[in-house]
Image (cartoon, rainbow over the protein chains, first blue to last red):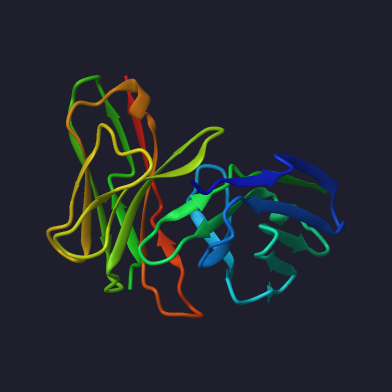
Length: 112
Length: 114
């Protein structure tokens, strides 16, 4: 059974810092990995999706990497802003119709 | 193009009552999913469907039933609600298309069972 772990569970940093969120998964046979953002009481917003054959994806100040063989992904946020405060979720997908397996998330607070 | 919509947004039930949550998507996706999100547990898959008329169990299917009579709709039913089913329910749809494939999520339904 696939298990996804996110470290740290919570993180509070001053505005402007660069930061790294970590995600690990137990079964390397994944189809893709996705990072989501969730604001309090809201739904999920997809940030980045990395196919199993890719090493990284970038969108603006966000960069996600994938090391499938070691079962790890990182989400790098550059020049953090208070608006980045949210919970960040990592999820992996197996092949075919498999649903996503989610980590429990990292609760991020960016202090002004 | 509304994406994925969920009805209702909020609901309060008493133990033993029944209800149906509706998920609708207008992207012509074959695959649809129901997840629940609980504090400290992350999202967990309840049931899913790979096409009209098909359903399958996910990680936590007990106490729920589903139906996919039309491609665009995926219904989640609670026949006899229990307090343990208090949660936020998310529906998602998915089209596997290579570089752009992703699951699209609805806004969620907050269910409280008293």
